[in-house]
Image 1 (cartoon, rainbow, N blue to C red):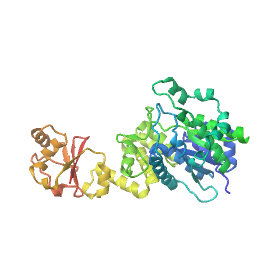
Image 2 (image 1 turned 120 degrees about the vertical axis):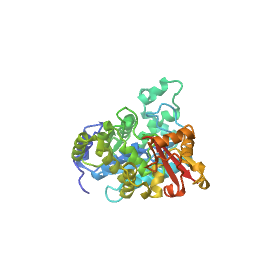
Image 3 (image 1 turned 90 degrees about the vertical axis):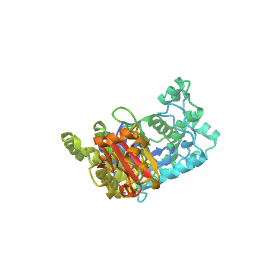
Image 4 (image 1 turned 60 degrees about the vertical axis):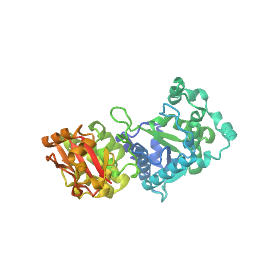
Length: 430
């Protein structure tokens, strides 16, 4: 078995990815011997989102450094719900929804991790042991090691207790015991001695290391990474349309590329270090060039390229980047394939137009502007067209009597109207 990379923790520190460790001895262990480590993934949705990518990459970084990663999908704890970071009780998942979510997350994790060789990854569902644990046995053998006084003092619990309208159920209150038992079960089954998680998981992780010490007399460790937050303190990973998912069916590679390309300058350095494998020296050089010419957005472009290529592959990244260049770089929109156009305008406001209306007064650009809500009346719409500043499929139109025909449609399906810089509307022809 190959020796681990002694610079693993040093790289995490340099990237800002090391928040807390339960003991400084962890650094010596990771540098000296291959270590089995796990991260848990909460199956509240059928896909992980881009904020979860930090934890996925933590497992990948561990494996590349010569350690063995375990990905735990929470089929058991997912039925309960983690109160950490939650201001109210979550709705419990049905077994059917949970099973579908687990299957989706399992497929994603299998794309990122290598399951072969001495450091081959392990993928497990904690329902395997939690679902078979008799209640009385759990309370007797596990519950007695947890002080209610200590649990109530935790921020996640105290905040909920102090807000009487929200409160916390015994179900969520018991979550920390279940996660601690996960660590114990993984220690017994796989010799797992390290748990990694976000900084909000510190209390849960420490409970697991304490349980292993009490019941097995062995040392284990915890390591946390910072939460992925934007410079304004809000969670990273939300677009105007909602979560940015890792599943291409929920968030297209183009939409992910655009989301990352629009990253604020104040956030791009941190995200490059968190979410890519670009070395720190190259990131430093890239940021220096970015500060010299911020308008080129090369730092954001590199972030978008790296993340989309890693999540969806080079072909999807190339398509997303080409679509971006054509749409925003003055290219010929008719050169784009139907699928690329559909992705590009999936979130744009849309109105429907019958194919029979093409070439008629109903397809006059002035009428379409009114229907799209871009002008209050046909008269004012015609005036706006005459004044300029309006495009159809990125081509200026100044003819107030312009009528859309089939030859004006992109991919034979739709036309895109833009008034000014930000008022977009798609006319979809049925």
